[in-house]
Image 1 (spheres, rainbow, N blue to C red):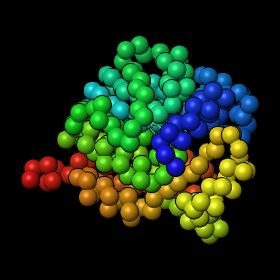
Image 2 (cartoon, rainbow, N blue to C red; image 1 turned 180 degrees about the vertical axis):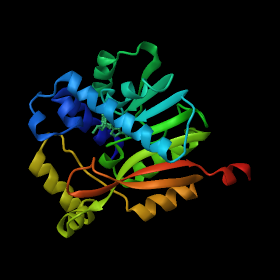
Image 3 (cartoon, rainbow, N blue to C red; image 1 turned 90 degrees about the horizontal axis):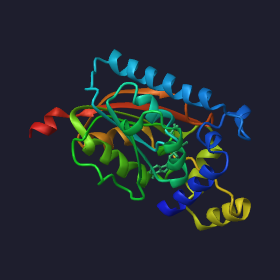
Image 4 (spheres, rainbow, N blue to C red; image 1 turned 120 degrees about the vertical axis):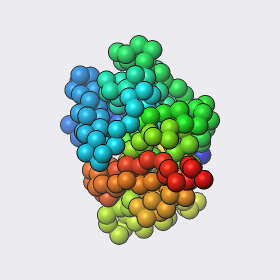
Amino acid sequence: MKLQDIQANWDKFGANDPLWSILAWPDKSGHRWQIEEFFATGVQEIAEVLATVAALGLSPERGRALDFGCGVGRLTQALAEHFAEVDGVDISQAMLTLAAHYNRHGARCRYHLNETADLTRFGDGTFDFVYSSITLQHMPPRFARAYLREFLRVLKPQGVLVFQLPDRPRQWHRRLIQRLRPTRLFRLYQRLRHGDRPVMDMFGIPRPQVVAWLIAHGGHVVAVQPDDSADRYWTSFRYIVTKNVQTLSV
Ligand SMILES: C[S@@+](CC[C@H](N)C(=O)[O-])C[C@H]1O[C@@H](n2cnc3c(N)ncnc32)[C@H](O)[C@@H]1O
């Protein structure tokens, strides 16, 4: 799967029931999300995340935040209630067009189309807070790993990174499907089954591998907490990470 395939998928979701493709609550399919209710879920999520960060004794500056995989800005706008400036990054222009339409914070929320497997548009140490939720789970692990490395690079020395990422499917037969997924036969099956319709693919990285990767790229893993935002078939975690100051001082 290439980034262009992921992009085409999300542009289709963005053009057809975008809010439900972001929060696929069963009773909300068919354009049944009320806008206020949808954005209120983001306000609640960010308040809870920041309370968790504070409870761990972390207090990032409230300057600049990054929302990676911002969709229509559900969490970007919520972050703008706590940070002076927020950059939302997404691979789908359809999603970003809606994000601009719904934006209530003027220039304090900036939205960017990112079509590459890196974040080179942002310099090292740009952000006080980097957040990503229900996004890394929709791309093959090689992309998720590359973005995790980038999150640490664009984080300020005293900044905080929080992201959600599934670990693995709960059931053995779903784990088997994950192993078959990269094969040609499986891709052919998917093409025959779904045709041109967009598919909500799910991926994960086992928790020990995520922790090892973060440490290898200069992260200090403060906490890993169970998370229930992936679908019910997956175990998922929220990672709270700072920069490893020892690595920085070397
Ligand atoms: C399920 S939605 C979540 C949106 C937002 N995080 C929220 O919770 O409201 C996933 C979003 O990730 C975006 N996305 C997927 N792959 C991406 C990538 N490689 N870079 C940036 N955004 C990506 C999709 O376009 C989509 O808007």
